[in-house]
Image (cartoon, rainbow, N blue to C red):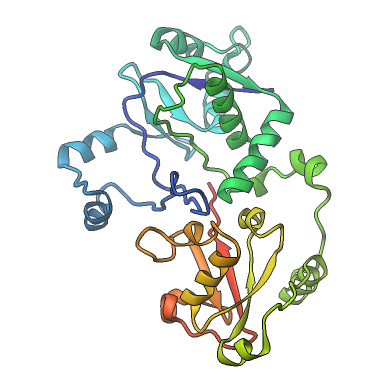
Length: 317
């Protein structure tokens, strides 16, 4: 069993550096980016969010950042020195200052007092709840998080259900670690992983064994005028395609292919393209094994029997 603390009034929380795939509903959109404080993309922030950070704001942000002597990072979230960081970073520091008389790792000290003083809350999560939260995040956001991220989301769900966090509140859930760091807890839920030689050929052979092609249900005259492309569907979108991992649609270019995909499976395009009708930054679309961003974007031509792959970006910490 693991736990997470939730102080009520954090001063500042920087959530840059977590790359979220935007295969989600339009009400929750992920963004990406990792920049140093002296090299923020000011033009992008102004164009996309109409926000221009001031020097005072940047100084406050920089001075709120913490770097531990073991390389870990964190953020001050109170004027009394309360720091938000990863569990393994905090436990390492606590072990260094613990003694035979006082084991801060086992007994705790400041966190419980800070929660009480700030009027915040703490919540625990069982192994089953953590795994369920990890699966939920993978299925809805396309993010494979480590168990620490599962704890955060599971605890957040509990606090929401208990009414300790308002359902209309704007909150930040920090997920920085890739699930490949801690695969053991998921073995009972998803089974043993397949073991293959370290080669693309072996991967392709396994992929072909585990997938099946959808039927090409189109008329012959239409097929002559428009290319028929095979679209590879990532896991987060398969709930919209009746669990099909491959769909055949018609179109002369990527834009038409995505429009046809949307017509056959409503809800897919808005998870791939933003409101400006451009492919979201954390989604990659490949035609003939090349990213369309290095071709003609949505105008990239698609030939008959070409494969169009929709690939979510991978996040890690």
